[in-house]
Image (cartoon, rainbow, N blue to C red; front, side, top):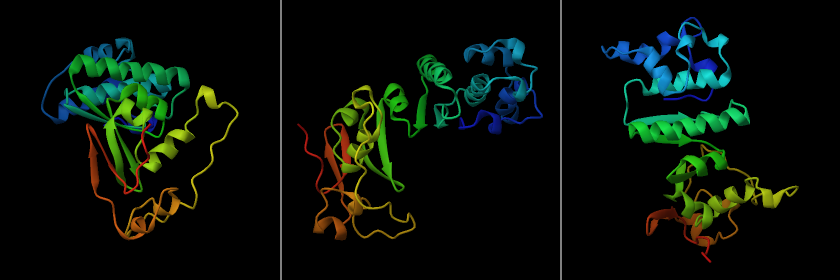
Length: 221
């Protein structure tokens, strides 16, 4: 796991070299911190430093090194760039891509930043109120969303062709997530909603390599 805030996820009383080796120690294995540091682009001379002596980007690299120490097949990244400056975000995203290519591992990347999702992900799952509403190859989702929530989400993302323009917000209000939904969870905010949406939860529809949960999906061009 790679957490959102690298400062909060590292023990402030431990030197970072000890932090990256903790998974190995708990698993009864041995490893070299300097090798792990080199894999994530950190100078081994930082091994004896404490988290507060590193920058945000350097701390996140330590956190990534710790997550990769045992060469796991899956790494979960929860908003790993949200606490970082823009220039540092790009470095961390490129690092994740390089690590994925070198180690052959998979990343489950959780984020609200659609730009980073598009850059990093091969496949995307869009969630609304705790449920996946659409899933498929990244470019297909971004180019032709089928679920109305996915379309609204993409419309709200900033881009160069929408400078100084604010998108129209979806109708209605976000419902209480504790609600026991009878029909579609998005029906109160969906421009395509009809009577069926209020009473029947949509089943999974499959369209080639992608799927979605919607009675009246967005029409593709």
